[in-house]
Image 1: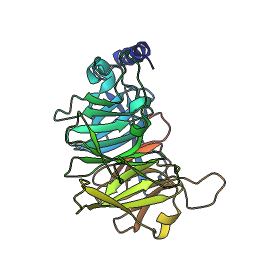
Image 2 (image 1 turned 90 degrees about the vertical axis):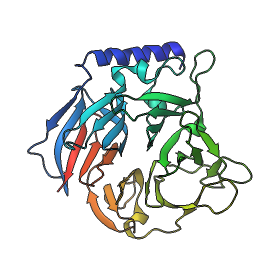
Image 3 (image 1 turned 120 degrees about the vertical axis):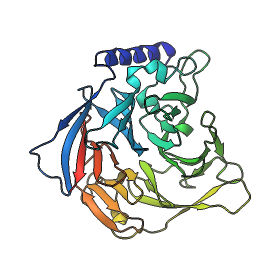
Image 4 (image 1 turned 120 degrees about the horizontal axis):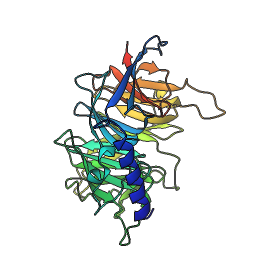
Length: 346
């Protein structure tokens, strides 16, 4: 996409924001007289400015729900004071040019930089899409956010190139460290050093000096769909199966701060899942399972496991994207690209 098209796209987003009131407040509609969804009770529908609201990615950090999607582009909702009636503190569509300054970046398109992955680390968010990755400063102020890095940058003539090695399907920051694992769809995992968020570097993971650790030595594997960290384990959805990868501190002096070791076999329900979405809190990992067309298997929905791989719950919903509150009481779910449904665990 050249710079003229990007300016047009950004202008349309600005005009869309101008049609709403002030900071495009959220419209929260209480849900009533709805059938229970297993252990979940739907308590609200939320729309951005009363418009159809499609969410590509959701993550929870610092008492806030961070989202990418349309028409808001990138947003932060406070869910601490009232988890069933979120308060929006920031939306990029209110001022796209301030969110993604031009120069050096230009229009920030959700499909290009916000539809594939999101990871929150410190005062920053790493997002990705079909063109590459973006680093967004989201703190310390809850009312501002701004792009501070992009991979790849625009070319000399203003064209936006693509870089498949930054098209992550999942981004997993490692707590108390500057490191992030970036999982591509088919090829493998990168270890990113984000100690300087505006200039992320890659650390060799594979001898002799490769910066990518391939999923398979036999070529591309289909397909990474999402990942989350629980304890010292990364739960990686690979569509036809769930991978569990143990993250350990390395003792070698080769400069690699972490090593990865895949769990060879999984117990019980975990072994039969086809994951299309993964989310984790401090206590549980939530695996959204879908049946492969034409196959038989476990019931579609969200399976909940503890750190010891024990299944502790099941939610019969089919989200396009979802997140869970830190206390494991509320589920935020985009199921139809019309609104964010809020469920309360009964």
